[in-house]
Amino acid sequence: MTVTLTDAADIDARDGQAVSVSKLVKQFGHGPEAVLALDGVDLTVAPGEFVCLLGASGCGKTTLLNLLARLEEPTSGSVTVNTARPAVMFQEPALMPWLTARRNVELPLRLAGVKAAARREQALELLELVRLGGQGDKRPHELSGGMRQRVALARALASAGHSPGSDGAVGPEGGAHRLLLMDEPFGALDAITRDVLQAELVRVWQATATSVLFVTHDVREAVRLAQRVVLLSSRPGRVVQEWASDGSERLVEEITDRLREVISSHAGS
Ligand SMILES: Nc1ncnc2c1ncn2[C@@H]1O[C@H](COP(=O)(O)OP(=O)(O)OP(=O)(O)O)[C@@H](O)[C@H]1O
Image 1 (cartoon, rainbow, N blue to C red):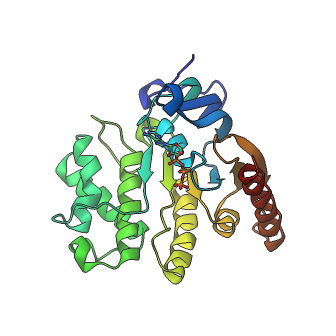
Image 2 (image 1 turned 90 degrees about the vertical axis):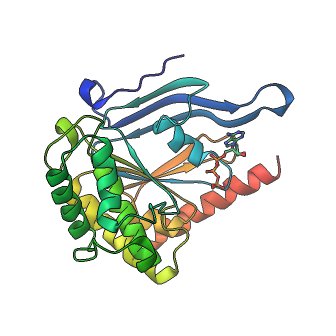
């Protein structure tokens, strides 16, 4: 088994990828109770690339993100992450209710040892970036669901740019690329707010040159957001097909048909 997890301080540009996953297998438990979640996943994400991971419920999308974030260990195969420590964003913003929006964004910077004046400046800059300039003193309960997710995005960008012990200006830590792992971050929002935040995310991604791996069930969302859409099979997950996205309705239909095939072949097995 090879497991390579590279820190920002040890950037390895051998294969030029921000993320490189090879023959990745993840099994939970042992014996008759064992669940094989992923079975031989191969995947790359280039620096600054936006990739959407699509698949039926339970196919192992979250497990794959957890492996990339080092929240889980692979059973076998290799995971190489050539970026600063990845930030993860979930469906729920998970903000600290007693902290203001600005202090929530500052939190990862604080944990990384960034000094007070610098982290305040960076948090305000990131809040501007997500169009929450002027809202930094509000607490989460004073913000709408969409605004809370914007705060979570700003916090994720703060977190992705820093490793513990780092200091300095907004931007990728030590010149390392940022990686944002997003697990259905807009799944709990109403359709209009989701639409606005999708556009915002693309703008922020373009402004920050962050690599993004975005998990969704929603084919239209994947085609709209991503440069590349990767379809996983039903459990155990492995990559079935990839498409370069042109954002077209025709591609939405093509991927939806393929997703239906994948789900129905699994249902019949
Ligand atoms: N800690 C765990 N212990 C045992 N089984 C697990 C564990 N975590 C996940 N699984 C199982 O692994 C499989 C993949 O789960 P995962 O959450 O990665 O799927 P998913 O594609 O993200 O699903 P969804 O789209 O519904 O969120 C599921 O069958 C799940 O029950």
